Image (spheres, rainbow, N blue to C red):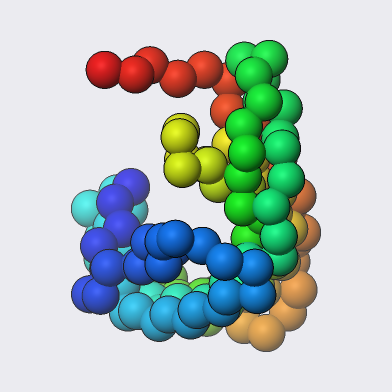
Amino acid sequence: MECIYEDPLPEPPYPLTKGEKWKYESNYTLIMEGKEHKGNIVGEEEVEGFENVLAGDDNWYFCARVKYTSVEHLVIDGRNMAMMTTGRYWISSDVGTVKQETTADYYVNGIFTMREKRTLLLMSIRKG
């Protein structure tokens, strides 16, 4: 699977400050099993604050806590797919994303089909 964005999704606008917000939108092509599917993503992010986060490598990292929402629309085999995602990620200037928590709601032709909750946690880094 490969996803090619027409406009690259933006990096957070460093240096981050509490209350800072940014928005983005991009069309994309999702390639699955050799087939191309056209989609669109619209997102909004906001720095909620800063805190220390314990990662899976037993180290603490000073992070910005960023709240985000995104809405994606995609057509696959004639079905209108939509994914609405809300969540937070904790990002450190030292190592990048330390933690991420998301909830994604999936819709097919306007009918809710599934909710997926996910937590990702940094387990190790290799500096070099």
